[in-house]
Every structure is written in C-alpha cells, then in structure tokens.
Amino acid sequence: MQIHFYKYQGTGNDFVILDNRNGAYSGLTSEQIEHLCDRRFGIGADGLMMLENQDGYDFRMKYYNADGREGSMCGNGGRCLTAFARHMGITGETLRFIATDGEHDAKFRDNGWVELKMKDVDQVENGGSFFYLNTGSPHYVQFVTDIQEVDVYEDGRAVRYNDRFAAVGTNVNFVQEIDKGIFVRTYERGVEDETYSCGTGVTAAALTAAPGEAGEYAIPVETLGGHLEVRFLRTGEQQYEDIWLCGPATPVFEGNIKI
Ligand SMILES: N[C@@H](CCC[C@H](N)C(=O)O)C(=O)O
Image (cartoon, rainbow, N blue to C red; front, side):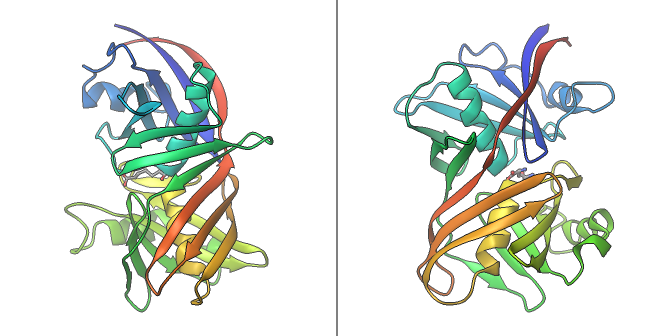
C-alpha cells in the first residue's frame, strides 16, 4: 500500500498526518502506525493523526501515539492538524473540530501561531509534592528547582509505571518557574520517552503554576522545542475555563511511503 503523508511539528512535538477524508487509511493497523512513526524504519514522529470528515464540524481529529495505539487528546497535534486542514483548503477564521475529548475551536494568528481552545478543567488533585489533572490527557505535574538537572526519562518513567498509574499510564511533567513564566519538560505516555514539547502537558503545568486568585492569566512557557503561551480564566480553586494553548504549527515535509 502506498501512503501519501505530511509531516508537521509544533515546538518539536512532531506528527505524521494523513488526509483520511475518503477513508483510504481507516484500515491501518496499530503495527503499521507504529512503523510509520518509527524514527529508524519509518518516517519518524511522536504520533500520527488523521484528518477526517464529521457532520456539523470542519473536521474530526483522530490521534495515535507513536506506539500505534489511539491516544487521548494531543494539544500540539490539534494545533498542527488545524494548520494542515487550512492547507487542505478548509477555510474560516475559526475552525471547529471534534476530538476524543470533545469539541475544539482553533484560530490563526498573523504570526503563524495557532490558538487551540482546550477543554475546561474542574478537578485538580493536590498531592503535596505533585498535581494531577486532565487537560484532555492525564497529567502528573511536579515543580522542580533545576529543570536541566532532571532525568526526565528515568524519573518520568518511574511515575508512569508506579502502582497507581502502570495500568492506564499518565504523562509526567517537570516544571521550573523562570523569570517570565515556566519551563516544562514532559515524559509522554505512548511515546514512552521525553518529547520536545507536549501541549496538554504545558497546559496542565500552566494551570497549576498560576496564583490562587481567580482572574485572567497568560503564562509564557518554554519547552525544549520552543515557546508557547497558555491563556485562561481561573474561576475557582480547581476551576479553569476559556483555556487557550497558543504556539507555532509548522509543515516540515511531505512524501510517499510504501508499507
Ligand atoms: N503530545 C501530546 C499529548 C499526547 C497524548 C498523550 N501522549 C497520551 O495519550 O497520553 C500533546 O501535545 O498534548
């Protein structure tokens, strides 16, 4: 089978994208998706997304982690798929799509950034040394004093496979407060490694980094792959609404691969 693919990245979180609006790629197996994402034997990516049709929406987002399994929401992926949808001729100032965690709106900024509205958050566990919340995907967040000293692979893996999380898994974020905002590094479930950036992780980190008072916040975020911004309204101790993940979403290359 010959596949025409597109490769996009958002702050170094990279994705293979397939246009599946005619259903041509619906039969791909998880082994085939894992192969396409393999950095040595395939195209190489943290995940694979399919652009699909959905009545009442501009498109449907289907997301698979690099291990070939369908994932939960991917924030950087949602921004990249929105940029891809526009490239494929889906027009409008705001695009509305449906993903595994529900509806999303996405807007384009003149500087090439894509702003993605994330689901509201109304539950944040404060475990003393960590926070645990779901921003479309599950995230464990731990604040540290020197982010460069953290062994994200070893320490992230230890949390992801501990007794509490081993069965279902979690993404694990290490966060340092810096002069302007926060620096976030993430161990991603389904990639089972550190990625250069994780959109739902950055969102979880920004929400938990905000001061306790209700109000509007805009938190600048640094990752290994570049700069993002998370804007939101804090309405209560554990309540966050109108959450926007903002950052670049860039085409890298396109091509054909036989599998
Ligand atoms: N890179 C993603 C997160 C993808 C979901 C995750 N790996 C999972 O299934 O838990 C992002 O940008 O949010």
